[in-house]
Length: 110
Image (tube, rainbow, N blue to C red):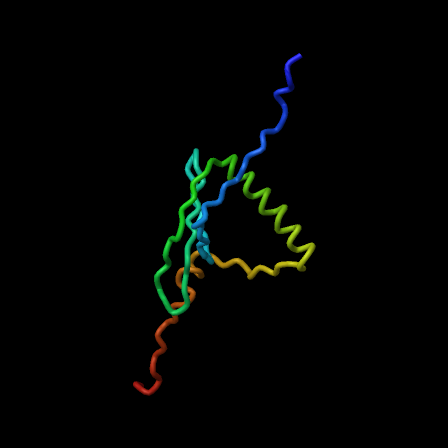
């Protein structure tokens, strides 16, 4: 009988010698019917620009697998290092315009 074709194939991950990490502290996620798009963004203090560092596009199935892998790894992280306390989620308007302060009227002009 032929060998079982159900054996899992092992991938050999090759990391380039000059591989570099990219820092992002924000991600915007959008989707189409066939793709999920992740724009990893770097926002710096005192700079009103947000720079997209990397764009990753994947199928919805792979995005779901990524979500499961993140949940699994974060659970392991919290078991080892303690609970991660995430800040309260803000609305998009608060995120975009929360730093904008209304001008205060001078009471001296009356």
